[in-house]
Structure formats: C-alpha cells, structure tokens
Image (cartoon, rainbow, N blue to C red; front, side):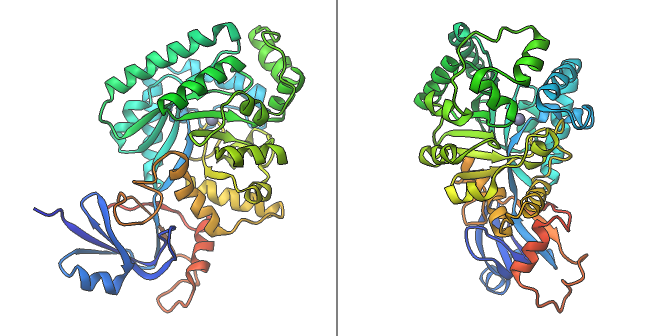
Length: 423
Ligand SMILES: [Zn+2]
C-alpha cells in the first residue's frame, strides 16, 4: 500500500535550494518530500492528496542547529550576566556539577522538546556526559552527537584518546541503527594539548568520524596561545590549580594552531570563530572547514562579533548554532538568525536574509553531513518543516502584493514566531 499523500500549501514556500514560490505547495509521501511546486500544479497532479493549507504563511525547511549542549538546558539564567569567558566557564563547571544524572537527562529532554517545537530538525550536540543521547534519539531529532574529550597534558594524549574511542564504540553499539551519528569533540585549544589534537584529528579522518572544536572564541584564548598570558592563565587555570607549562605556547592564532595540528578539514566543525584574521579565514576556506556561528552566545560572553563580511568574502562554509541555554536565551535557531541579522546590520555589515536562511538550513545540513535528508525542500528529503505566520503583520493580507523577498525579510528579522509544522 502506498504511503498516505499530503499536500502542504502556503502563501510563500522557500525551498532554499531553488527560488521561492508564491502560492506554493509541497507534496509529502510518508516521511519524505515527493514534489515541490505551485499549489495549483501539485493539486492537479495529486488530486486525492489530503490538503493542509497554511494560508498566509512562509513555509521553510526545518532549521539545523549546528552547535548545542542540550544537557545544559536547565542552566537557563543560572549564571550571572556579563561574566567574561574564563569566569563564565568556572561558574558553568560548578553549576553543571551540581546537577545530578537524572537532572541532566531531564534537562536534555526539555532541550530536545524546545528545539523541535521551534522548527529545528537536527543538531550538532556536544555531549559532555552522554545524558542527552537517549532523549535526543527518542525526540526524533537527527544530527551528530560529539563526545567531548579534553586534556591539556601532552603526556595524557594517548590515554585520553583511547578512552574517548572506547566510549564512542560503546555508544555506537548501544544505539546501533539510531538515525544520529557519533563524533568527537576536542573541547578547545586552551584545554586540549597539541598531541591530542594531532592524534584525535588523524583518528577522526582515518575512521570518517566527525570532529568538532570550540575555536577562536575569546580574546583570552588568543592570548593563551600567543604566550600563555591573560585570563585563561590568571583566572581559569589558577582557579583549578592547573600547571600552565605542560607544553610551550605555539605563538600563533587558534586557527593557525589547529591547522598545524592537522585538525582542520571538511569533516571538522568549529564553533564560534570570532577571533580571526585574514590568514585564518584563508585557512578555513582552503581546508573547507565548517564553522558554527553563535552570535548570541558570543555577545553574552563578551567575546565580540564574528567578522561577518570578511567570512562571506573568504567563502567559508558557515552554519548557525545557539550554543547552550547557559549562554543563549533560547534554543530557537530562527531567533539566532534574527539576532545575527540585527547584530551584523548594526555593525554596518547587513546580511542578505536569503543568505541567513541558507545558513540556518542548508549550511547546517552541510556542516553536519545531513544534505541527503535535510536542509532544503527537495524531492527525496525528509518532510521536516518550519512555518512563519505572516497574517499578524499588516502588509501581508489576502490582497497582499508583497514579494517573497519582502516576506522573507520580515521572517528573518524575527518579527514573527517561527515554529514546527505538524502534519
Ligand atoms: Zn559550545
């Protein structure tokens, strides 16, 4: 028996991989998209389909949140505002430790629900403990779950990597057949030694394991790599009583350091990437490294603004991420995109709304290796949608002659609340 057919119609349909359609529709068969086109054409082609008409709405592919820590959802508002990076990390570690296993699992389940409800279909999830895995899989979210490993001691590189490999093998066995992939997160250049980056990245490349790294996030990280000075040394390491001389400072930028360690590449997804210069951007482009831009987290942690225009000019593969609720106000990637639009526009580098839509959808799917299933409205891809109601906005009424571009600008500027579509 053929799977049931549904025709989902909307005033504006944004396939992302193709031009926007006014009075468009998407034909859905079972879990997958069968066709995308004008509502009139598809109604004629599939006369027996169940019809769902969203009316004066923008229909979008579900977004991809390329950088999350769902275990930390319970920490919303738990850490004081205006704490710089090093002090925020110390507060985060204390708060996270205070949550037990059950609380972390419940926190991740709540995060998964919020994520799905906001019209997001997949995530790049950093798993510090692994309590998010079951809730994420049960929720129906797709994506990559990156096991977090760190050690600043070069003598511990092999042992740390072996432990991570064993843990990943256990997860892969335990969750065999689940529609998520497992990857490795080597936390950051101020918590991971050069040998751990070298060997971890080489192993990921040899085994086809996705790799994620927090990189070039704060000015403090840049100082630490330059000469072991600044708040990473004076605040973070000092508070933990950690030795600061386990290996010499590389004396280069975080991105250059990762390149030297062989940690950049098409299967690497960096998060943040705020503290970069032209050479760094050229390296990211040449190695086809992807980057998750997390503007609200960067602003909250006083890390500055990612140089948007320079990234676009360098043609770096970009996605968007919310980061955790410990540093972002919501898990809605659409709200993250609206924040990016506002932030870069205020700085005199206004993004094209269509470009931001691409980052939020296809860019994320590309960064997480999900292009076969998600990121655009195309035949064969999963039927995962987000919708933005336009009828609350004055200029979009039944007689509206607004263009799809004008509608998209309203949608991406955060003037309407975007959510998931339930078929
Ligand atoms: Zn993060």
